[in-house]
Length: 155
Image (cartoon, rainbow, N blue to C red; front, side):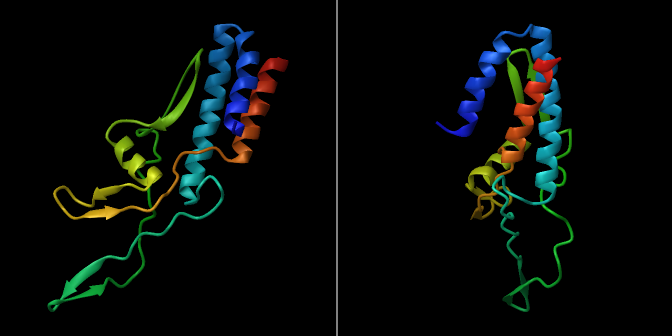
């Protein structure tokens, strides 16, 4: 049994005793805080375990009939649009809270989350993407969930 299952079992028993409106309030509070925390971690380009995302592969460009690596720095960090509120959604109700990606972006996020093989461009060559865990709970986030639950139960 992992930490998340243990937290879910512990919290489930406590939440069952609360009114539905109170459960929605605590789910909303946890969801907002969790989404902000996940966005900050993605902005910092870190996996939930604290390790850095594997950097982008340098592009190969054709120059006078031969391939060369493109010079210069990568000007844009990864996942800038992906972490915006338009795509990174927080849904909650009396039964729970969900933080994740919505729409077609969810496929892109899954490819990076699981390190799948996918075409770089439509009908183009496939590339094996490295695992970059966009979603996941850090120990600090688990503590935050526990603390928020305790705060709501105390009030």
